[in-house]
Image 1: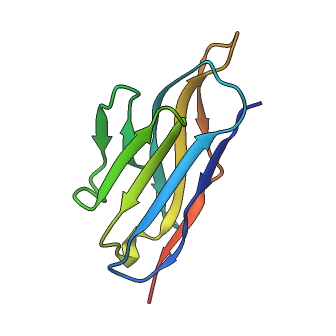
Image 2: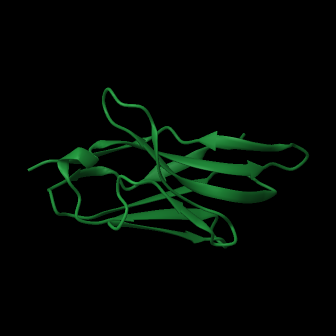
Length: 120
C-alpha cells in the first residue's frame, strides 16, 4: 500500500510564505512526475505545479511568479515554496504523483490534501 503524505499547510497572513512537502509512504519502484494541485471552495481542482524526476517543470497560472517547486529525488520528496500569499490562494492543496510499485503498472496517486488558509 502506498500513500502520499503531505505536510506544511496551515494559516498564514497575506503576504506570508508557506512550504509544503509530500512524499510517498511504502516501497516504490520508480517515481516520475510529482506535483501539486489545489481546490478552492466552489471551484474546480487546478494545477499549481509539477516536476518530473529529470527536473522539467510545469506551472499553472494562479501562483506563477510566487512559487517554486523542487524535489529531492533521494528522499522521494517534492516541495512547494509559496510566497506573497493572497487570500484567494486559500484552498486545499493536493499532492499528486505518478509512481510505480514493484510488480505493478504505473499509477497516479493523490494525497488527502492539506488546507492552506490565507487570512489576517
